[in-house]
Image 1 (cartoon, one colour):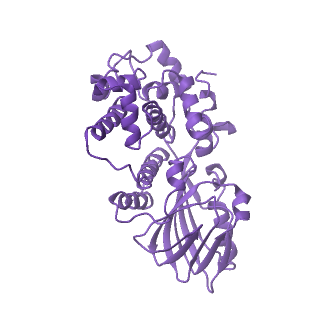
Image 2 (image 1 turned 90 degrees about the vertical axis):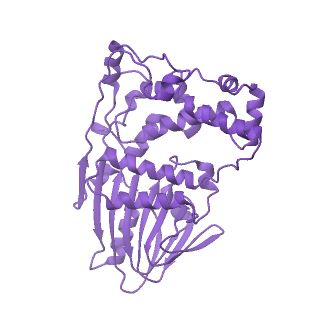
Length: 387
């Protein structure tokens, strides 16, 4: 996939720069949410006014833009033009065209957040191991049929897709797709670290269309294409909502058993989620709230299929921070670390790197491209100090 910066040179590419909004903060105040005011985090304070002046200076403005591109195959050589377009928008792939082939597409993107609506004549797609190695793209794709039928194979899975059945596949593995009739579909790029990797690796090729969450996912992706007036910020928020729905649809949540210990596990999970934004909350705190010991807390969570108490706290905190970093908005690492329950920006960066394999700044650079004058977006925030 090409970056938004490269696409700016395309003659049919139109961009709309997202506006930036800064929220004023005065003095010191308690956390805004009712749960935070009532919970053990009551009394926590944000930095003083002089500190906030420095925070304001460190807010990074990313260079990501919302862009659209309309494409139609060239009349003189439709096959070559479609091949070139796929190389640009998706990656390396081999094609076998049917007679009288024609295709068109409409793409929208903010950085790596991309969704394409396309119509294509009869065609065979093959992505071999060599193609995979060629571009080194380990992201995923969500394919939503709008019209027609197509066959899809990846690994040992083989499925036939049509409107109402959603295909989820790994772009970093060989695949084969064919259709003998004209089809229309939406294809959404799912960045590698935007969903739970274990869930994605174990996911079925066809999502369960009977689940309401899957139907909500399809509606959200359709809305991305059908709605008008997008800005970079709004599009990234709506796109991330689709990723959240997808992550949930890939999760076969652990079965909740009856009994006191099962009830304790669910209460523990809810308490951890409600109070994760307070750095003073620990497994010992949660156990005390439930009137049980730490060892018992560990056992009831493990039996219910959850992570250990400490790991669950860290995971909730870092994933919430990741959601905020994945929006095309200015960010302040100190503020995010504070508001999501980390004792320091350094501890936040360490937890983030451990969970996602890269720093927050590296993730935003990968997702949204480079900032003004080619400097990596928010690079000056990586150490939590103004530069």
